[in-house]
Length: 217
Image (cartoon, rainbow, N blue to C red; front, side, top):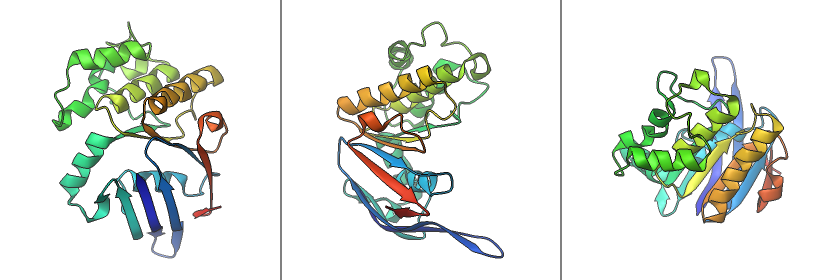
């Protein structure tokens, strides 16, 4: 269970402040597929990063399971994130000088699980990347890059996938494939939270949450 309790996030500049999230309350049950939709600037990415333990809210709590994550020490929160959460981003965030299998294996560097090259190769097979495992990101198509990012997100066998506009840089066929992989993870009991301004994930969603100007509508 993920519980977002009265969360606000304010970005301050020298001259003004922007309230990206404004008293957001939301409960996400284990095994749900949630789509959070909103226009650019609505607070979607801020909410996702806050849920994922990567951006401390100005006010409020994020509770994952029994853990109020922003009361935890930084290392404890990082460990919880590494064990339980996989991230998928629009811009892929692959390390350019590492090949596919090395990028997929990056979560194992946290040392939380005994993960091997064979574990990574199994994911590479499942995501139809065989033959590309020794290629660098610059040698991959956009769809291959995103499939590599999904394989990396799945390596630690997380309970939750948080996806920020995961189809934003993809053509319709590759976008459909990516959402299909997230749906497969969901069907196997995982929790999926997708933030997007589009509708491609709607058919898989248990709930669609609309976010506008930092408010849930």
